[in-house]
Image (tube, rainbow, N blue to C red; front, side, top):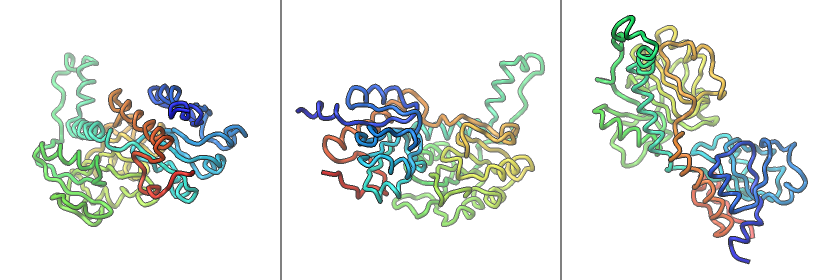
Length: 327
């Protein structure tokens, strides 16, 4: 039996909706098993026996892993994987992969676009033109804020954070950052605490991953430290922000404006943020171009192919990097 024929016998579970290109490749390469959502109650005896891999946008929890005793690999679509219980996966000798690098530049572009939209009020300026206000009322009001003279702090100096920093340098803006630890080889000023970073800059861009260690890390104290001229942009995870505190900070002038691409309970956005005139909001589109999503889909499926042919992953997450393929 050839490798291609062997792969056709491998059952890959795809819960819910998934990227069309990835589904097409899985259909051509593996035996795809579809399920409405990642719910252990929906796992059949046949799935329990046959499924060896999962390809998924959605979270995979411990109960779902336990429902599939022959599960070897979870191929998570996206760079963030906080919705996968990687600790449980590691304990169960299940490999978890994600799709880093291929979306870095796209998300960094989005971050800069969102920053400019937030500071210069461009979406509302376009509405002013489109709804006829330019004709009826004259020129759009001058923007209160500007990018000129700003200093930027990045919360989460990983691949995407560094790509954003390179773009900010081209704008002539000084950059500092906060991470769990200092990144070797970077000349940007490092702050050991998020509060210290917020106190030192007037523009804070969060690229931090989700998880317990970053839950509501951007809170009332951090926003107060950012100050009345402060601008906050989030393209990381919504869970890293205390959204009630952010809405209050926008309403009472604790900070000047915010640009958000991610939210704690997507697609549900708090009304207080929707109503905030000084907030620019996007529906989690950081990597959402055909080009980048296709590249992410390919890497997601390539991890499955590599695992079930070469018995190694291409992009394992750190928590499961030690996991070895079963015989």
